[in-house]
Length: 478
Ligand code: GLU
Image (tube, rainbow, N blue to C red; front, side):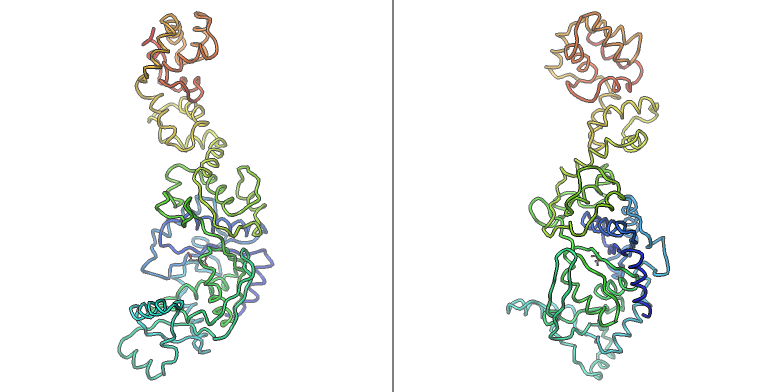
């Protein structure tokens, strides 16, 4: 407990210390990914530190697999943590499930001040009380049933084998004020806040308590988190105040909602980083999109994380809910796809290609389709066209090809027999034989070779085809 102030000052001297503190109860949701990103950027904007803390004290809901997936998704997004799981330092451990001894010391400090008391109310009793409060038009809050039990009464219940939770005794008649980094001045009345649980019946620390204590012990100076935590902040300030610990500055970021205005959820489609990643979205597309979602003022250009950090400003975080729109994400995706190196594009789309394809053919195919692809699935039809059997032509295509005539295709096939899958040579031979140019020259070739009137640049597509493929396709019409 000692040295917390000096801890805070030390952290401040190095720039802000921020953190992302997920509960590993599911996949990394876009909203949480954005919270992580904003905290990362806030730290990096001013040369500070970004911590990762796993809030896994709720043994029933937390799961090691979710933790592993979270770490992987954050790493994939590029949000490296300066300290956290796998990068422990003197402030760790960074899994709350391993911090029980530290919490115990702080519980005792509160106990010795009489700031907490055991509560024997059962979940059923609590629910019934809440229902009664709602029915009489009062906001539900803990009624204080166990607040003033005598020591003998507490002893008697313990002897019956009842395992109490521990509640924080909220002082009456206090106004609790703080300035939110996003929402500005906030004011709450302590009388509206019921005594809240800081330790569960199984002895584990509850959110209000361990989240606040850890921020203080880890030297966190700024907390950006979801708006759903705004009303929790006065409780946490009470805990920190009672323990004499420094409080971070809190900023509550607006929620992400779907097109219908409801909080983003499964029924809006994909919502987790994992799902977008599995569909082939790039990390840079996601970070660029999330960076603009609720944060205004950035130029429209694909930025890397250091460039985002330079322009990130808490004052640019909006208070209104942010509307998720996958079409906007697709715009960033398309832009990031265009910027991939040949090797990156190959690793992005390579799994779609026929096994054993020689690298020049693979590179030619990828370079040709890349401008037409937002997601790997968009390349799939072109894989079929280029590497599958000869295309079936629609009646209109068939007509256009027939109209070009057999002399046209005889010249084309002859060139293909000599030069292979070399479109410029084929086109030159057809031009020489027929005098056609422009669309008149190229459209019948395109139709015969791909079955489609439009598509990626034709020469590299043809170059990617298996040997003899152009000849086979052109000969059909000669
Ligand atoms: N574990 C909490 C959550 O995932 C953290 C909230 C906070 O950032 O303080 O919602």
